[in-house]
Length: 184
Image (cartoon, rainbow, N blue to C red; front, side, top):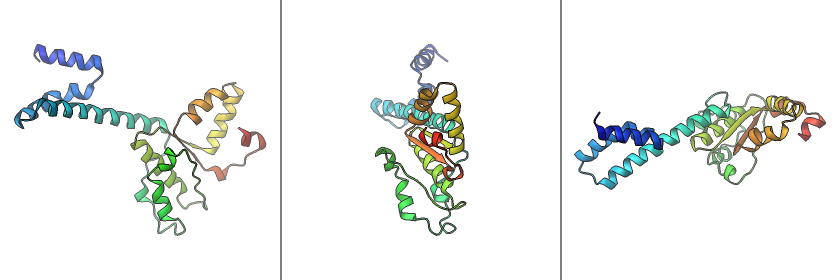
């Protein structure tokens, strides 16, 4: 590595540009052989950095979301769940309800794929860079009760309930709520 390459590497390290540090040399060679302009080269390395940053963001969002699995909407079995309104459910994949700050509730008997759909919507949101939190109703009630006993309810609500742009509470119908739980 020559001195100029070391200076570029050092600048990329200081500026926290790992994709540019890793890819600039090959991209510069490619731009030179394709007779591209300096602006084209700059645009391509900046786009590589943006793509890399978005991928790291997705990975972190996925890690912190608490999804029990990865599910996709197109894997949902509409033949099995014959009463599921395909058109309405398909519209949910646009995630417009998230931007409109609306709630959605998936209702139906046990075993028809409500959790699959909820996980698929959550995963889709994460892939678009939206912060998601997935939790079962039982775990939420347990964590709320624990936070209340520890006098940390406000902190828990801000971090775990209000912070994500999309909060998915699964298995609500499986848990009886007392007066205290319903009010929390």
